[in-house]
Each structure stands twice: as C-alpha cells, then as structure tokens.
Image (tube, rainbow, N blue to C red; front, side, top):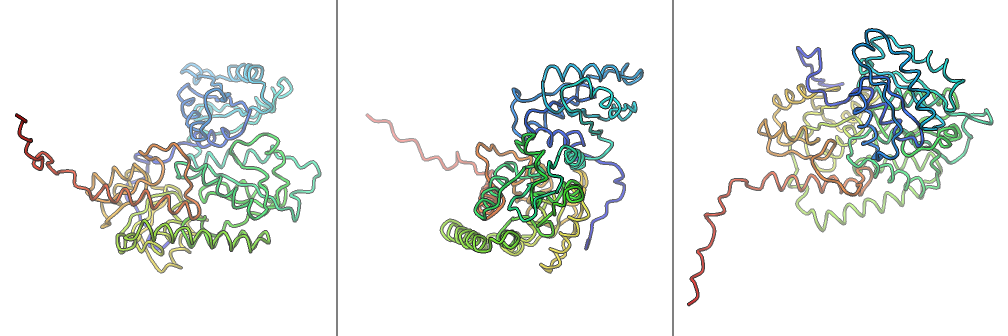
Amino acid sequence: MPDELKFENCSHSKDPLVGCALEGVATVLAGIRDVGIVIHSPQGCSATVALGYDHQEIDFTQRKTACTRLFETDIIMGATDKLKDLILHADKTFGSKVTFVVGTCAADIIGEDIEGVCRVLQPKTGSRLIPIFAGGFRGDAYAGMDLALEALVGIMKDPEGAGGTQGARSVNLIAPQASLNPTWRADLAWVRDVLARMGVAVQSVLTRDAGMHELRHASFASANILLSHDVGRGMARKMEEAYGIPLILADQPLPIGLGNTSRWLTALGERFGAEAAARDLIARGESLVVDVLRRRGLMIIPRYRNCRMALCADATFGVGLARMLFEELEMLPELILLRSGRPEAKALLAAELASLGISPQVACNVDGYQTRRALADSNVHAVLGSSWEKYLARELGIQLAFDVLSPTDRDAYLDRAYFGYEGMLNMLEVIANDFERALRSKEIAWENYDPQPAPERV
C-alpha cells in the first residue's frame, strides 16, 4: 500500500471503532429466520447479541436467544452442566430446526468443549446443534461475521450432489449487512432490482431474512456475489471448494459513484449475457444524475473542487468512494482511514489509487485514537465519515464534516441506497446539507437585528 501510515506506541486498541467477534456472529445469525441461539456467557453478552438483531431490525417477538448467565463460580468451577441444561431447555422452548451454540470469551477462558457438548446432546434434541466459537479474543466484528458465515456452509446440502447448477441464472448475495450504510437494506434491494432487470434470480441472501430452505439450497446458485470488501471471502472460498460456485465481481469496487457503478453493471451484464440491460441501466442512471444535479446542484463542482479530504470508512465504501470523490466531485482525498484491512481489499484500494494517479496517506484497522491522531496531523479541509469522525473534526477545528456513514446521528425512517446512481445522489444530498450547515454562522446575535416594536395603536 503506497504511503501507508504507521503509528508508534499503539500496540493495543484505544477507543475501538469495531465491535467484538460475538457482535459479528450475532449480526449474521439474526438474519436467519426461526433459529435458536444459546449464548454461553455472562449476562452482559446478551446485550451484544441484541446489537446484532438491532442491526437486522428484528423485533423482540422474533428473537429466540438464551444465555447461560455465567457467574464467577461458573468460571472457576466449570459450567458444562449449565450449558447442557440450557440447550435442552431452549430446544424444548423454541422448537427451532437449528440451534446455534455460541461460545464467548468466558467459554474460551475456561476451555469449554462446546463441540463435544453439541455432539453428546444431538441425539436428545429435535434441532440441529451447530457450535460457533465467537470469543472476542478471536477478533473484531468483521472476524465474527466471517466465523458465522463459514459455519453456515455446513448447513448447505445439494440433494443431487452435483454442486451449483452450471449455466443457471441465479446467484447468492453474501454479507449485505457488512456495510456502513446506515440503511444497508436499501443497497440490498437495489442489487436485487438490478439482477431482476437482467433476468437473474437471487437464490439466497447470506444473510438477510433467510429461511432454512434458502440456506440449504444455496448450493444450486451458479455464482456468488460479495456485497462487502470486509467479510465473506472465506465463505465464498469454501462454497467454491464444496459446490463449485465461483465468486464473481470481487476484483473491482462495489457500485458506488458513476464510474464504479458503470463498471460493476457492465461486468454483471457480461457475466450473464445481459449486456443490453446493463447499457440501459447505465444510460438511465447517468441521465438521472446529470438531470438532478443540473437542476438542483449547479454549484456542486465549484463548491467541492480541490477540497482536501479525509475519508474514514470501511473497505466496502472506502474503496469506491475514493474514485467518486476524486474523479467525479474533483475533491482531493489526502487521507484514507479504513476500519478494516483484508489483504484483498488493500490490494484493490492500491489498484484504484494507482489508476487515479493519487497517493493519499492510508491506514487500515484504525481505532479511535489513531483516527484522531491522523486527522490532527493532517491538513485537510473536510472529513467524510460517520458521526464519530464528525465529532473529532469539530474538536480538531476542521470546519467541514460529512456524516454519511454509520454510526450516524441522523434519524432514518426510510431506507435509502448508497449503491448505484440514486445512491450517489442520496450521499450527495447528505454532503450538501452538511456543507450548508457547517458554513452557516452560529454566532449571529439576532436580537441586534430585531426591528423596533411598532407603536401602540391609539
């Protein structure tokens, strides 16, 4: 990676921006309908699992979770019997076809044999028991998502034993929730719509509102599409080995901005023999962007030209936004800070920056302390990121901060895509409004401009 930032005396995380592996596991499992989750942990980890359900917007009436609620004595003396009792109780209470038995940091510390427990209890339960080790020692939320996604490969069964149906026009969509779009569900809907217009069926979404039937038949798809540059490659690799399903479109940025959307749609159309549909989608989308910006954003390029930018994102959005900011808005990305850092994503970002001919400073797997330090040492006009970076920018005296990504302090009642052409406009609308608010004076003494009170009527 060119000009990669190095941080001294940062051997441990300060103000982590990414949750633990358990949160990532829960975010994936919460996207599967009618499964039970047994958490072998102290009671506080239940709140972490709840965050996964919150991310999927699953209400409390549909959550089938149980926690062993480990205490100090359990950690010292062992809690295998407690786990066994809870698994049997959850199986009877939930009546789920599948129960995930999730180990946490506490289970790792005491060396709980979760796989052995599941193996012993399997004949006594009506649900299939699947163990997952999700202790925070094993990594962050991205690592947790990978752990859960790879565990799902074992559920998939191909009744014909022939792998994915060759030539079939169907795909699996992997990891739509691994995204910093606060309303990522709209990005998933945009991809589904594009595929439908090209005559391509979605076999399974791994995972979003997925039933066990969809998971078991994911092996029939003819291709996998990753909707994240941060997670999912391990699952795709295992599915290719087990069922011969290739991963496609993983060597280019996701459809963010004009150029990346055009390239992504073109590649998708070529893969499925839908070039005409792709050209139509591109023509209509570019016309939409030009028409809207001509009427409502006349000052958009002069406003942003040569604005020195710090981009704070995950790889999913960071790789695509780099081109949109530089090539389409004529900004100057001088600092790119990613919360993640998969080797494939770093290589993709390096290729993008080389093709653009720019060399910003880059850092991956950053925490809050590193983000603040990098911003303080930079000379940027604006920061594009989440509400976290917006607060940091204000503290450091950076006037412009665009609160586009998650977590955001904006109320969102309707899902709005960031993928595609309308998605670009959605992001630009946020950026434009934050620009106006930042330059609006906050120190005008309006009372000095009040007109004199009108004389009383006689």
